[in-house]
Length: 142
Image 1 (tube, rainbow, N blue to C red):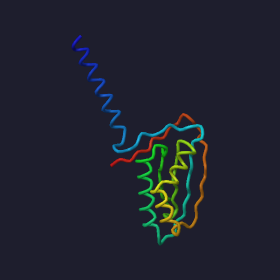
Image 2 (image 1 turned 135 degrees about the vertical axis):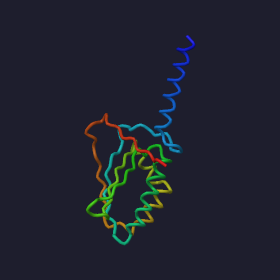
Image 3 (image 1 turned 30 degrees about the vertical axis):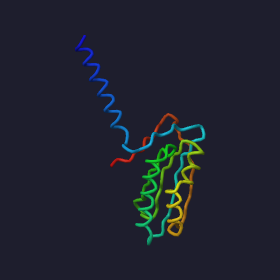
Image 4 (image 1 turned 45 degrees about the vertical axis):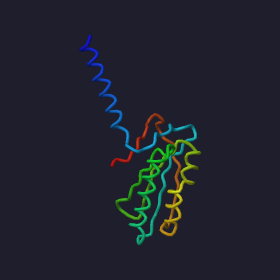
């Protein structure tokens, strides 16, 4: 019986350690996607002379949003391989309210106001997931 209890304790500890490893330290607990969740591709064209500065703003706002906002589920920025000035960001929000909270946040306002003159074009493309059971997990690894 003592061997069985020890074995169970080891299993419980292993599962706990693995689940903790899957979470990013200092990241808020995330909300679940609601019926009014937003899945969006933001397509941004940046003027070439501002590209490096824009990238700094984008990385900062994405990181802060993921770490501090429970309703920001994904903030995954990508740069086009053919045209480095084209940035696409996959964004998912748990709800309309989470999105409203995000765009009102200090870090988003700093990004928005700081990059207005850098952006040549912006297209917000809302999407519908094909498989509602497919879940994205976006974390910041440090």
